[in-house]
Image (tube, rainbow, N blue to C red; front, side, top):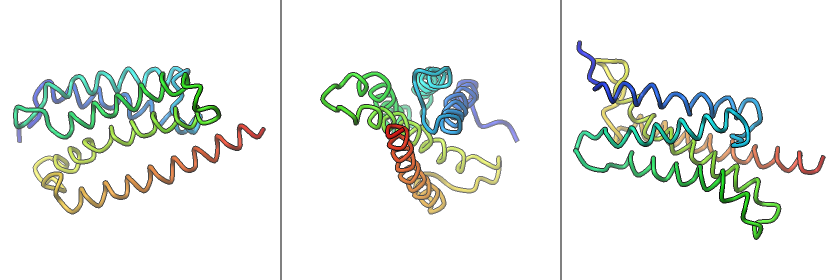
Length: 164
């Protein structure tokens, strides 16, 4: 069976793995994506390239939900990385706000990735038919729960670090 992805689709898919791996590394190493680290900077650069390359991809020829989620992920990531730490009005909440923005961007990054993966793999016998498929909806609900539990754990870890 021929590969259903275009050259740009293949490049986008490979480039999208960069922020996924960098984000996972940040979560494992520091319990958050920290933009002051190499992994954090790689995450932000990879996210930017991933979102930018997605605009060349569209089965309808128009902006779609995945594109909108990409823009929201960029806003959350760069708002968390650069804006939140400078908002003195947030006081002690600056680091949790930064953490939320970057973690939420990772959550958003994975939403279209989950749909695309389940709708394309295994090749020729995809597990799901698209975003409305019950499997996709179930996996996205599980992903939401993981995000909420993960962010709660991040906040507890930040609180413990601040107390020390």
